[in-house]
Structures are given as C-alpha cells and as structure tokens.
Length: 256
Ligand SMILES: [Zn+2]
Image (cartoon, rainbow, N blue to C red; front, side, top):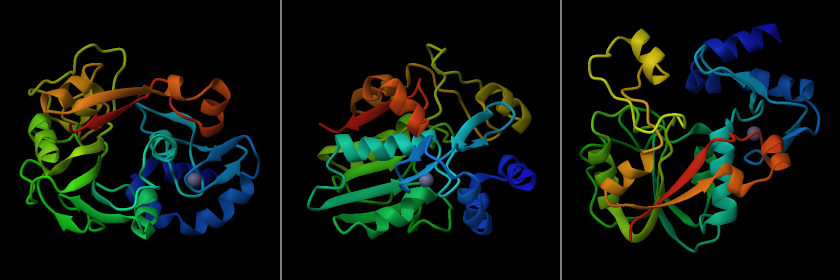
C-alpha cells in the first residue's frame, strides 16, 4: 500500500489511470466496505484514497476502482438526477478535455451523438484550440468542458465559442477550481513560473484562480446560469457517502 499511495500522490492522474490496472485488482479488496459509494462505477468501499498536490491534498476522495474525484461523482449524480442526459432520445454532445472516468461510458450510450475534442489529448476525437472552434453554429444540445477555463488565455472568448456551437435550449457544464473565499477571480500576468503559479493559482499550469464571480464570466459569454450548491442537492449523510466537496457549486450554463 505504501507504494500505491506514493504513486497516487506523485504521478499525474492521466498517467496514473493507465498504470493503475494491476492495482485496480488489489485495492478494491483492501478497501472492501460500505462507508463510501462511487455512483460512477457503482461500487462501495471502506474509504476512498487520498489525492492531491501539496497545496491541495485531500483525504478519502479518490475512488480506488475508476479513480473518480469529488467533482466527477457530483457531475454524474447531477446528470442522472437533474438532466435528460440519460433519458433523452437523441442528444448531440461535445465533450472538451474528456475525463477518462466518463469517456467509455458516454461512448457506449446509444442516445448520444458523442464528439470529444481537446487541444492535444490522444484520447480525443478531434483537436483544436478552444479560442477558435472549427465547428458550425447551433450544433450541440450538451457541452462538457470541465477544468479547462483556468488554463486558457481568454476564458470569455472560449466560452463564447462554446455558446456559439450550442443549440438554443442547450446546456453546458463547465466546472473550474473555485476559491469560495475569494469574491473576484485572481489574475496576475506577472506570475509566470510554474512554482509561483502553483502557489498563487493552485497548480503549475493554471493562469488564474476563479473566485465567487465565476458564473458572471459565463454570463458575459451569453449563458444564463443556474446555481446548484452541493449542500442544496444533498444532505450530510449523502455528502459523506459520496464524498462530495461541500463547498462546490455546480453551474448549469443554459443557452436561451
Ligand atoms: Zn468509482
């Protein structure tokens, strides 16, 4: 277990996911139990694993089977309970920077026309820069673009582009790391070294740290935003069972 924990905390998640197969057989046995539940792989455990960099280390958050984190489990639950994602007849879906824990499942889903895009990831269908999406207007019913806007040069431009390729009546989930203590998003173009960026923006390759004003950025790009705080969606026991982040707010960005 020492080695497993060491690897978890030192390797980047995408690499981890590829290396994790032998561990995936052993760890669920070691973590057999009923205290936590991952709705994505539908398995229960005595606890989850810990995860995160020095700046943002969290205990009991990483599902040992499919490596979901708090935000993945929240999005999955939300899709199941509050949207037509699994029940609609036909949905055109654009998934930017697709999360590995969702990719196979969404690909298998018969009711989706499912397209994935990324600037470089080998697992995506097409590659492009989000500032200039090479796709036609009014095409998608659903867009996912999580943990991207903190990396891009011009988030409003990228959001506007996503808004453009969506149909009227479509909805998007574009979660970002968000500092709920901070009123306004923190940007400083003079902070450029990976080390400083990690200290100020929580990760080496982040260009900003979003604050409570994040939904206003989405509104600037033309979206109407519904707010779903975790604490309004789930009670204490559910938050503990699924190990969600209590402060997280899921924003549903609608194109009206
Ligand atoms: Zn899981």
